[in-house]
Length: 450
Image 1 (cartoon, rainbow, N blue to C red):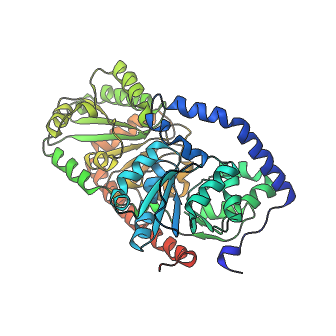
Image 2: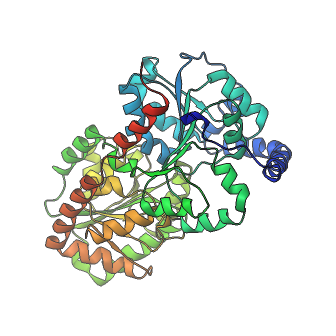
Image 3: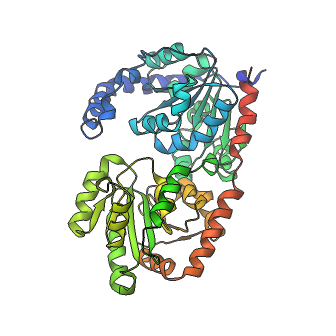
C-alpha cells in the first residue's frame, strides 16, 4: 500500500449523510450567493471572481504538477507563507486557494514575485458541492493538497479521494470545544477525517484530540506561525517613525480586535488615564481591528467616545503620524497587512479575539518582535501556545475585563518588567521555530521534486 492509498472507503451511513449534506448545500446555494453579493456592499472583493466559487475558472493552468495549498483567509494565508516559500524554493508549482477576498489579497501581496514569474497562481475554492469540486480538480489536477489548520469540507475531501489526490491537514489544530462537537457525529466524522492521508498537528494536545476521534496517522510538526518572517521594510518604517516620537513614550497596541473588544479597550484605557494621570503625557494607544469591513464602524464608535481618535489612513507620512502620537491622539490602524509595522512601533500588545469568547488571534508575531503580550481569558484557538507563552513569562493573562486597565498600567509603569518580558518573548518565538522543515520532509514523501 502506498502513501496515496492509505485512506479507507466510506460506509453506507456516511455516504447517505454526505448525500443529505450536499442536498442541503444545493438548497442553500442561492442564499449563499445572494449573501456573497450583499457582503460585497462593504467589501467589493466579494463580488469579484464569483464564478470560481462554482468551479468555473478562466485562467490558464501553468503546470500539470501543482501542489495545492488551501488557506481560507488572512490568518491562514500568513501562516502558510513559510510553507509556500519552501515549496517554491523546492521548485514546485503552487496553487493557492482562498475563501475570502482579504485572504486572496494577502496572498497576492506575499507572493507577488512568484505570481509574476508564473510559479504560483491563486483561485477561490469552490463551494462544497460535487459538480463544482469536480470541475476544480479537473481544471487544476493537483498532485497533492495541503489544507491549512481547520478546513474540513466533506464533499471536497471525498471527491479528492476519488480523484486520487493525496491530502494533508497541515498546521492542524483542534480545540476541545470543536473536538466535543465533532464527537457527536461519531464514526461519520471519523470517516470524513480519514480522507486525509495524514494530519500534521501543531501540538501534542491537538494530536491527542484528533486521536480521541479514533484517528491515526497523526504527526506533531509544530506551528508554522513561529516560522513566519516579519516584514522588514515595515520594521524599518516603524523604527524611523520612532525617532520623531517623544523620548519617553510607551505605546500599547490592541491588535486584531474583534466586535465588542474596541469598546472594552477604550473603557480600560480611560480608567487607566483617570487612575494614573501621570501616564497621560507619555502613554499612547493604537487599536487595529481584525477585519477591514469594520474600520468605519469602529472609527465612528471610538470617535464618539474620544474625539482624539485619528485614522492611520488620514496620516500622509511618518511626520504626520508622529505628530498625532506626540499630541496625544489614539490611532485607529485602518490598514491591512501592516502588523509588523504596528508591533515594531509598540511596547505592549493587547491581543484581540481573547477578550471576547472568540478563541484569540495570533500573538506569535508580536512576540517575535519583542512585545510583551496581554491575553484575555479566551485563547482556545491557541491553547498550548498561550500556556507556553505565559510559562515563558512573555505574556500575562487577565480573566476579567476590569483587570485590563491594571495589566496595562503595570507594564507601562514597570520598565524593568517590560524589558524582561520583551526578551522572554523573543526567546519564546525563537525556541518554537522549525515546523516548516518537518512538514516539508513529509511533503517530499508524497510529491518529491524533479
